[in-house]
Amino acid sequence: MISKEEIKKVAEPKIKEQGGFFVDVKVNTANVITVFFDRIEGVQVEHCLLISKYIEEHFDREVEDYELTVCSAGLDNPFMVDEQYQKYIGKEVGVLLTNGKRKTGIILSYDESLLLEIVKKKKGNRKDYILEEVSIPKEEIKETKLKINFK
Image (cartoon, rainbow, N blue to C red; front, side):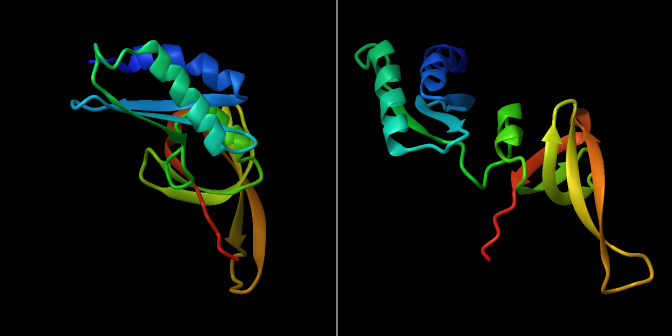
C-alpha cells in the first residue's frame, strides 16, 4: 500500500510548480488515493490532470494497484493549512473554537492568530450594528470553513 508520506513527497513539488499548495492526501485501505491542493488563483482541471499524470509516473500500477483522484480542496471543506487562510483574506468564514463557541466574520489577517471583523448588535438597540475586530489564537481554532453567500 502506498503511504500518505510517499504521495505527498511526490505531489508537493509538482503542486508548487503549478503555483499551488498541498492541502491533504487521503489513502484508504482499498488503495483509493485522493490528493487535495489549492491555488490562490483557483484550481483548473488542467492543473489536476498535470499533477495526476505526474504522480502516476512515480507509482507503477503493476506493483501497486491504486485509484487516484487529484482535486481542489473544495469550498465546503474545513481549512487544513495556513495558506487557505491567506487565500481567503477578505472573505467571510465560520470558526468553531476549541471551547465549542462559534465566530463568524471577515478574515482581516492570519499569522500567529486569526483576525476577524465581526458584526455585532449594539447593546440596547435592535437595529444598530457595530464592527468589532476579534483576534483568535491558532491553538483555539478547532475548524474554519468558508461561508458561501448566494446574494
